[in-house]
Amino acid sequence: MIRSNRWQSYFSTAAAAVLLAACGGGGEPAVPEPKTLPPVSRAPLGLPLAPDPVIDAYVQAQLVEGKIPGASIAVMENGRLIYAKSYGYANLASAEPMTPEHRLEIGSISKTFTAVAAMLLVEEGRLDLDAKISTYLGPVLPSWESITVRHLLNHTSGLPENPVASTIDFLQNHVATDAEYVDRYLKIPSTITPGQTWVYSNLGFDVLGLIIGRITGSFYGDYVKAKVFVPLGMDHTRIMAATDTDTDAGKAMGYRLNDRNQIVALHPPPGELRYLSNAASGIESTALDMAKYDAALRGQTLLRQSSRDAMWTVSALAEAKTGDMRADVNYGLGWFLSTVDTYRKIYHSGGMPAFTSDFIRYQDTGTSVIVLTNESYDRKVPQVMSRGIAKIYHPELPP
Image (cartoon, rainbow, N blue to C red; front, side, top):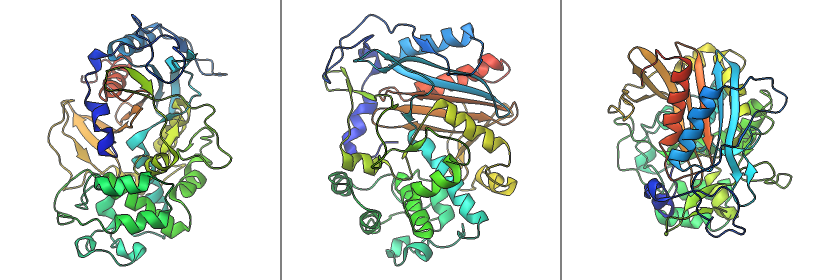
C-alpha cells in the first residue's frame, strides 16, 4: 500500500538495475554491490521441520532474481504448519541472517485484521455493517453522509485511495492523535457516490480503524491486540508505532532504492511511522505468527462461520477486471477473492515503503502460503513466490 506521493518512486524503479549486498558496508548509505545473494537460510527455533531442498532452491532463486535482501515463508495445510523458513538477510550492513522469528511489516494484509476486528464487533452487537459511519463519527461532509461501514470494508465508499499530499504531510510531521486524524480525514470530500463503484481506498480502512477506536474507546490496535494477537498467541506481532515499552529488537531492516538505484535502509521518523500504523497498513508480524492467524481462520476459534462467510462473499460492486495472475479479481470484506480453473483463492498482498508481502489461501486444497520480504522495489515477487510455493506442493493448481 502506498501512503504518500513521496513513496511512489520506490515502487516504480526498475528492480533489474539493482544488485544486493551480501554483507555490510557499514553505515546507512548505499550497500556495496555484490555478485549474488548468498544462500543463507534459517529454520524456526524448536520446530522439527525437515528441510525441503525443492522449496529452498526455489525461494533462493527468487531472492537472487528479484534482488531481495531477505524473506520469511510459512506453508500451512488445513491450518497445520508444514514448512517455515527464512532466507537471506534481516540486516545487510551487519550480515544478520533473516529468521522466522524476525518481524516484518505486512502492509495491506493488515486490512484483513481490521476486517476481522470489525466482524468481532458485529458479533458483540457493537457495530452494524449497514449503519452510516456518521453513527459512530458524528457529523460528516455531505458527500460522506450515505457511506456505511460495509462500504468501507468492501472499498465501495467512494473515498479516494489516499488523502491529498498536504494532509499526509501534516500528519507525518508529528505524532498525530486519533482526534487529529478524524479532524483531518473528515474534511476530505468524496467525488464518487457511495455504493456505486469499487475503488481501492486506504483512507477508507483508516477511517474504519477510527470507528473501531470510537466504539472501543481506545486506539484500534489495542482492540486488535486484545481480541486477535493475544488469544492466538501471536506474541511477536504488534502495531508498527512503538509504545514506550516496545523496541525495534527482533524487527528486520527494511530497504528501498535511492535515486542512484542503490539499496539503502529506511528509517521513517516517528510521525511517519504513526501515520503508517493506522488500520490500512499498521501491523508487523512474523511468518510463524501469521501461520497461527491462518489456523484460526480455518476453524471457529476467532470468528463465527457466518462472519467468515460475510468476509469471503464477493460484493456485487467489487467485480474488478481480470488481474495479471489470470484471475477474475473480486473483493469481499477486507479480502481479495478469485477463482481460477475452479480453484477458489482468498488473499491479500501488502506493499510498504520498505517491505512487501503476500498471504494466499486456497480454500479447496486447504493450502495457505505466507511470504514476507524486506524490500519495496519489486512488489510482484512475493505474489509470484506464494503461488509458486503452493504449486510445488499441489502441482494441479493453475499457474
